[in-house]
Length: 269
Image (cartoon, rainbow, N blue to C red; front, side, top):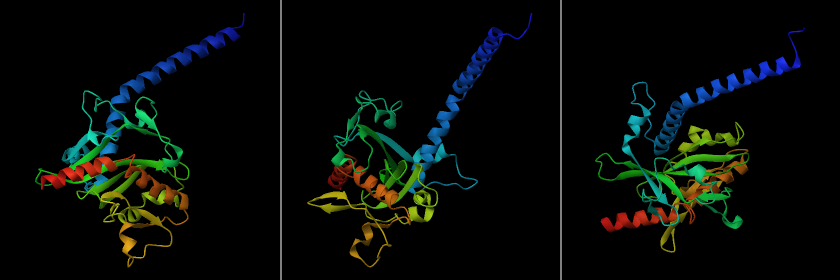
């Protein structure tokens, strides 16, 4: 009687599949904590980079230690107010998951969806970088995302405490073309944002004012303070970055929060 039969082959294959599945599942569960810690460290590092305070020297403190100067708040984008923890638990809330949940997000009408994201979460985290004295903040870091040429670009925009001057920008996840749209990662290009005026006063309130322009910024122009050089050979990605900033600093993004915050700071003076 032959030892190898179709039934025996199927049985061995099934056992192998079950064992391998068990090993993979066990590994995934055991590594979940480490994966979450790495994800959290990546997020913290990018926020610190956007704020221009990340120290990557050999003797620098761990990222979590550097992040202690940052205060995290969850805000309601529709009201501009901080969300009560009885409404949403900040420890478990994930804005990107919420953006795909009809109960936790809002559909964006096509004519208003300049960032090309389709839906927008109701609540989003903002990050306050405390000043050296600890009695106020020096910068605010805002999560941003929008469509480029090939991908959704995820990043952070940092504003000085005047809530209009760019302190820094970073993109931590995207699929843009290396050497072209991928140059949104270029340190020199990101540095060109620092000091630019992302918002300007119009009809008594601050509105988005960043323009990514082709052919280079004319520094002698009055508009230069609002302008960024477009990426060479990457018009769609460049436009995508401008549209992303416009959306998130606009009516459906952080505009209400920022303007309320600025009013509160002014009244406190």
